[in-house]
Length: 291
Length: 337
Image 1 (tube, each protein chain N blue to C red):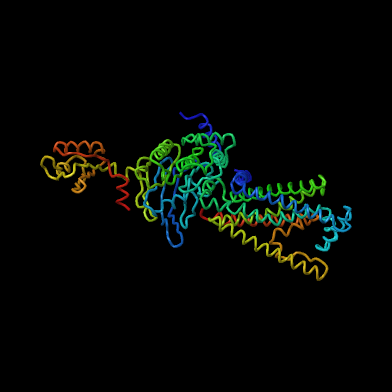
Image 2: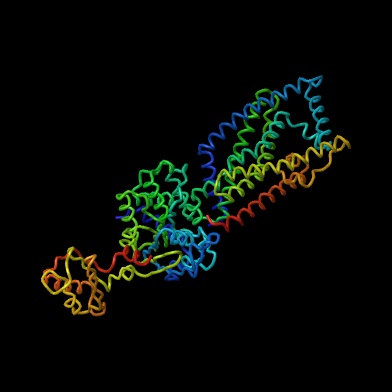
């Protein structure tokens, strides 16, 4: 059987399982509720921004945003591009990207470890290659997180649209872009979560290890960000990312939002490589272990 | 009479299994000096075993004998520390070559709780490279085979132990694979369900090579053509069931309690019995009140020897309680382990 077909069958089942399980339903409901509140907050922030000072006209408001973004990024072209994104969508993207590792960890920690614990995996390994089983789990988890992220973006966009902060055209253009960024980044988190899940028979150990790994990655990203902001304040120019920041998938959001195609493609290439290496390592271990 | 859907589904599986070198080898499973260690402990120690195609074969032994470890290595769940395992001519992990040709009932694997029974079986059939519509037919047929036709829409997590076992059995036989591995197929089942499961397995005899690992020796004696008796990770006896139970060259006659040996009326006439045709050795167990006769199978078969022995005993007015060909498998295992 074609491995792609095999992975497709496994991923489709994983998606069904994720949507249908009690954990999936509870997490989905909580996430949507949280997203609704978050989108109200984002819209409120945008409303407060717009009401501030003399920035009454849209043009003046965008110019104010551009100046602030240029200060933060040190990149005039990027700041001008980013300033045209509706604030509520931009804030919501940041929230989505920041929370996606949590969502991935909670949805994916038992994807493999749960089936190892109860030996349910044994029904599959006589019918599918172990590496495609793992890849199916990854694609299923990524797809599930992607679907949840899409729902969140639609929700946040609808609230912004209702308040009149975005036009339908802007919503489609920027909403799709924001979802794409969050989706690509969540793939890297999903690969790590799947790998860790395949290493443990006890789901709680997989969950704790996933949290620990994500936290270490976050420390790398946060450390790099703080260091860059300090340098920017001292020198007045924001420096490039430190090498260790590349271990933090969320750090790629700036590159993925860039107006320059090469930067977007570079970020995509790194993220795809990150996923491929993580899954290859996971498959190597999973192929050799007793189940 | 088999339903048409089942025949069609089996044909589809057979077509999809085309290209596999079925029938090239007469051996279904071959283990060569296989050792499996967990830390410093060897669960299986240099075990060699050959199981012929078409047979129903039992793996027997006490707890800790290495049955499940051996079974798990044949199924590809565990990797041997040393030695090699061959299943239908391939390594057990060669999924592509063995796809749809091997079915397994793992002993303690839970079914996926949130899946419906029907969709679970269809999904597994699809992974066996069967197109969607035929996969539905195959799943329905497999489920009907275990009397579970009504469970299609039930969640696996809501099934009773007996129902779950039968669904697991259905997935093992999905598409009538060449080799089916069953680990404790009737463990924990009530007698009626256990009987149904045994009946189901017997109905599959001849279609697949079946390997059963079980504690239930009576069941194995009923079902299996051959068996290997394991103890402490080694094979201590293996062969056809008739050889293991010595049913072709030994008979046992139980007499009434208190029957003495001797030539008088009501006593066991040992010398008369030893002089009967084909008898090689004869012993009388005074405590168990059992006569054990070993005979030359080239001169006479078991039934002829039973006739001679019973005639001699009845002539001497001995009260007979029962006659068996050979030892029971249980006795044989107790002797060896």
